[in-house]
Structure formats: structure tokens, C-alpha cells
Image 1: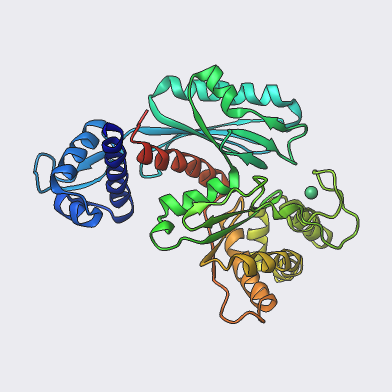
Image 2 (image 1 turned 90 degrees about the vertical axis):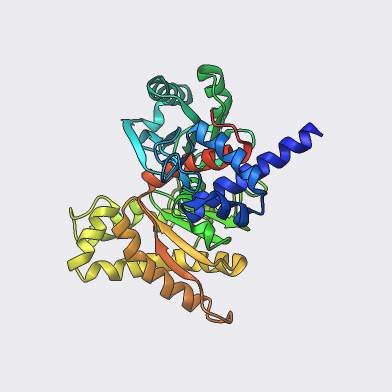
Length: 379
Ligand SMILES: [Zn+2]
């Protein structure tokens, strides 16, 4: 009976927190109506949340005050391992990054060296402030249920790395480990509040590699092999290009940022080295959009199959540079529309998201925060 009561209180607490997160400030009476919870239960749960500091009153001390998620409430720690760097941050309950730090990482330095750097950086952050949880975003295949990073094509010998067990042993904290693209998608779903409007979203990230993430029925899709969204290693027709995964002619060897840079360098030598450079050059060099158009067609063909299978409500595009993402959105929209023209109805809107490092960190923290809402445990 006690367990049933606790389960109900947890569910009610989660409903209240989600209503405040997605709908903004609400009075106790409005919360009671919105969440279908008795006023006395709302009062008791709100008192508990005010005590924790995750919720605050808009006019403190007034029983008719609005309530909102407290931006100055408990922080969440996040880390993001990319192929070049490890970034650490503390994230506020509203998604603002309170503090961030970046250290260089040599992906060839080996599993143990990378894990030590991850642990050392986190230790410094955790010593400064108490957090309600820790989220870690890593590239490649990730099994979030076991906290294991299964494989990352762009980090040599990175296989079956038990990141969660390692951090638990060294830091005594149970971290959430998730794939970088799924974190980026969750950042948009949770902090940009897409979840208030959409349940089915496809994220496409054009970076050093190509990766996607899928939100289905409001939940991140992991897949049977933890490989949902890994379309960058689909083989395409081409000129025998080697991929870091060890195979030939993977899609990302033609449409990733390094491939795009190479294509542009053939025509404009010494002009670009990154997504940001491409975006800037594209503003006043009419040749660049043509190259983007040609290169993106391979990606659009693969994405069309995914769009046809998932029929999402919205497609998000991410990259290391927001302007670059914005430039490729209309190209992808036109090309995917063409490819899918036999399917009745228009394809969904395609919009850009913020840069990948920030969204990966915010998303890793957002997953932790949504889990804390669910469990009622705030550190
Ligand atoms: Zn590959």
C-alpha cells in the first residue's frame, strides 16, 4: 500500500514538474486543474519541491503565487566527448549553461587515457558544487540501459567502454550515458520544448561524421542494436573512399564536413577548413551553394528513405555551425521533397538547431533532469 502511495505521489510530482517546465508559471489551483490532482496533494508536493529548490514562487510567501521551475535551482553536471575535445558543464534547470570548460583530447591516446581525462575533469566540477545528477554524451553506438559506449568509428579502439561503471567506481555517482545525437535531440525536445508540440522528430547531424536521432511517441529511440539513427555508415555508390569504420564508401565519407571541405578546396584552394568557413564563404561566393547542392543529394537520397519510413512531424538539422545548418535546410527540403514526391502530402518542415557541443551538453543534462522529475530524487 505504501509503495502504491509512493508510486502515485511520484507520478503526481512528475506531472506537476512537467507542467511547470512546459507551460511556464502556474498557480497551485491551475496546477490542480491541469494535472487532475487534488489541491491538498498539489500543496503538499509543491511544499516539498520548494524545499528542494527546484521550484520557486513568483511572489514569494503568497499562497496564490505563481510557481515556476527555479533557474537557480539544483545544477546538473554534463560532459561531452567529441573526437577533438572533452567539454564539461554545469547546467541550470532551465537549460542555461552555468559554467563550461573544454580540454583537448587526442582520440588516439587510448581508452584508459580518455576515461582518466573525463574523470579528472568531472572531479573538478563536482568538487565545486553539489549536483542532482551527471549526464555524459559520447559519439557512436551507446547502450544507455547499461551505460556502455559500444563503438565509436572516429575514436580508434573505442569498443565496449563501460563508462558508467568506470565513473561509478571513481566518482561514486551514477551517470546517464547517451549517444551525442540523441542528447542533441533531447536538448531541443526538452529545453526548446518541442515535446509540447511534437512527439515524432528526426534529427540529422552533419559533422565530421553523419548521424541522426529519432524521437518517437515522445521518447528517444535507441533501437535493437542501439544503432537507431546511424545512417552515416550506409554504403553508397562512389569512388572507393575509406571510412574510419574500416569499410568503404560510407555515406559520411561523401557528405561529412571533411568531404565538403575537400570538394570546395578543389575549386577554391585554401578557402575553407570548417563548417563555419563554408557558411561564411557561401554568403558571397555563388559557386558554394552549387557544391552544397551536389554533395547533399547523396544525403537527401538516404534521408528520403528514413523520412518515408518514419513520417516525422519535424526534421531538425544540426552541425558544428548554426549558419551552415541553416544553409543546408532549404537544400535538403527541396531534394527530399523531390525524392518523396510519390508519397502524398508534403514532407515536414526542416529547421536548424544550435551548435552541437552546446546542445549535446544541454541534452545530456536534460535527460538527467527528466529522470529526476520522474524519480523524485534530486541528488
Ligand atoms: Zn563507415
